[in-house]
Amino acid sequence: MHSQIEQIYQSVLKRDPNEKEFQQAVYTFLLSIDKIIDELPDVTYHKVLERMVEPERVIMFRIPWTNDEGKLEINRGFRVEMSSALGPYKGGLRLHPSVNLSIMKFLAFEQTFKNCLTGLAMGGGKGGSDFDPKGKSDGEVMRFCQSFMTELYRHIGEDTDVPAGDIGVGAREIGYLFGQYKRIENKFVGVLTGKGLDWGGSNIRPEATGYGLVYLSDAILSDRHMELNGSTCIVSGSGNVAQYTVEKLLDLGAKVVTLSDSSGMIYDENGIDREKLQYVKVLKNVQRGRIKEYAEKYKVTYIPRNSAEPNPIWDVKADYAFPCATQNEITKADAENLVKNKIKLIGEGANMPCTAEAEEYLMANGILLAPAKAANAGGVAVSGLEMAQNSQRVQWTREKVDQELKNIMYGIYKNISEAAETYSTKDNFIDGANIASFIKVARAMIAQGYV
Ligand code: NDP
Image (cartoon, rainbow, N blue to C red; front, side, top):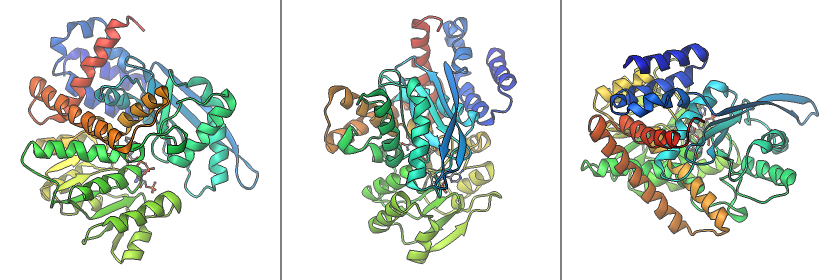
């Protein structure tokens, strides 16, 4: 590493000593930028990297709400407004007990570059709370969302900051959040994306992250004379991204044999067909059940999650793997299993699903790795299209949005593969994604002066 880049990294370690996930995201990003920094003296002169690792604004707040017994509960809320270099802050809201400032900052940092890759005018942000929606009634979730928005509303707006969903935030939560915003501001505007189809949402938004992941993976494979048709795939998670990844893999003729949640995984050697997938959608989205119930219904293998490594899901024999649950779900030990089983491609549906050591090991062993910044950008891309539709007060057809999504994902593939070849090595899509997006954000920051 150049001494200047090393210094920036050391200053992050010193300034944010407890923010492991943020440090990890910055570290892997800096490793890529290290390869081009000599060619960009203006980036050094204008301290662009030093500015990029410091959010423009961090908002942290108290969220009081009452549970069904009438008792007061207090959670902590966050919104990290990382960069407005390319447009209004844009990024999801996560509701999960693990949420903390480090996770919010890593996600907002990644989001800035992901949003850039879509080619749409969006800055980067992320938010959420350590509230756990699991086991809560609809009334409790609504009261929590209303209290969350009672603080958040003053910081967001259709031209300022436009949140969306992420882990634990789906259609139900977006509805409650939007309702409260409207009530306070007395404005019906596109301040959130992922809205219901009847009230300002976009076609294909729920599907977009999973579909986009498969489109990008398919583009990588087709270019190398490989295909999804007839392949066996493993998918982790069972939420929004996992469900629509499976759906598109089925459309393209692949067989998917796994799904998981934080309690365990299922292995269905006959494959998850459309009827079973429909069952998963209802189970997870309506009944808010556990993936174990799939194993009971279809009499397939269920392996409870033991937090000790390695995770058995990454030791299932397959051609391609799609981690779609959460950060750092693939450790070095899991990566060794993936390599041993000759997995050919990993498409990252989740954000930062590989630890830095796992990523290094997978790359060293020649596995095609489609990094999250590029591979899961379909969700925010269609959120960007939802913003455009809201501004025009129109709604595009499914076919139109799907075609736009495909165009964006193929455009991202072209962009990151060209950047990889130009600045790094062929097939190093991690460098390709980091470098292509960095150059564009850096240029905008330099042009806009010292802000
Ligand atoms: P959901 O809440 O719909 O589903 C999350 C899934 O991951 C659930 O199956 C959940 O299991 C599992 N999971 C969550 N946390 C953990 C954990 N600590 N350990 C093991 N499993 C866990 O979220 P999404 O599908 O929306 O998000 C999944 C990933 O995709 C995240 O990394 C998110 O940031 C990323 N992403 C999402 C986008 C979107 O449009 N929704 C866009 C881009 C990226 P359980 O039910 O047990 O919690």
